[in-house]
Every structure is written in structure tokens, then in C-alpha cells.
Amino acid sequence: MGLPDLMGQPVLMEDDQQDDDVSAVRDALMAPRRFSRVPFEAADTGRAPNPESYLRFVEQVWFEYQASRVGRVIAALPALIANAHLLENEPRENRRGWAVSARVHHLAATTLSKIGEFDLAWIAAERACVPGERSV
Image (spheres, rainbow, N blue to C red):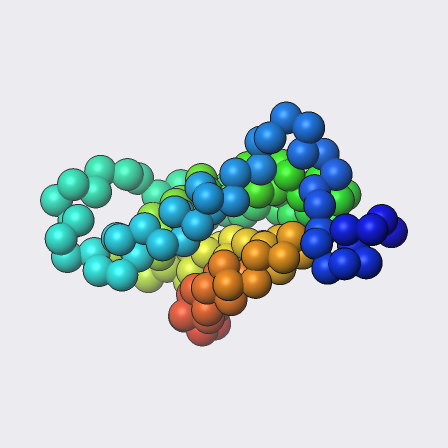
């Protein structure tokens, strides 16, 4: 434990390459299409990934978190969140997609809390609630 930890200022240990862009995570969580699909439906050309194969990728990023490679997780979160949003918008019965989205947002909340981004962690945790409820 170092001085920043004692003072409540966590530091990412592998931040040498500056690849942990928290502002990109903020942008993904706060994307306007998160609040209303209607104005963006015509422009939304993204295809949702297959929930089963995407879950394997999400679990690999969880492994990075468990291995204390938090910078890598932060770098992966913007794309994970964007794809989670696509999974939520699938028109068919989509319990597995909702479950994967909940898992992604749980990862985001856990990681952001670990690095002291408590406001974003709270938003990510809130974003995990609806998909989590719809997945059961």
C-alpha cells in the first residue's frame, strides 16, 4: 500500500501507456442514445453481437480485472458498454442479451469504484439494474 492509497487517491499501476481513458467510459455511459432511442433509430446501424460469444469476451475482461490489470479494463469498457447497449435494443426476446448487458455494467461499476470514480460507478450500477431485472 502506497501513500496515494492511504490518502484515498488510488492510482492505476499499469498506467504507463496512458491507455485507461476514463473520459471515454464517461462518454459511453452518458451517450445520448442511452436516454432515448427515438431520435437515433434511423442512424443506428450497429449490429448487436451474439450474446453467447460476447459473454466470453466480457468474462475475459473480468479476468483482467481479477488480475489487477485495471487499466486494460478501463480501456475496454467504452466498447463493452456500446455493445451492451446494442444488445439491450435487440427486438426479439433477449434475456441473454440483457444478462450480458447487466454483467458489463456490473464490471464498469466495480472497476470505476475501484479507481475512485464513484459518480460514474453509481451511474454504471444504476444502468445494470434494468437489464438485470429483465434477464430473469
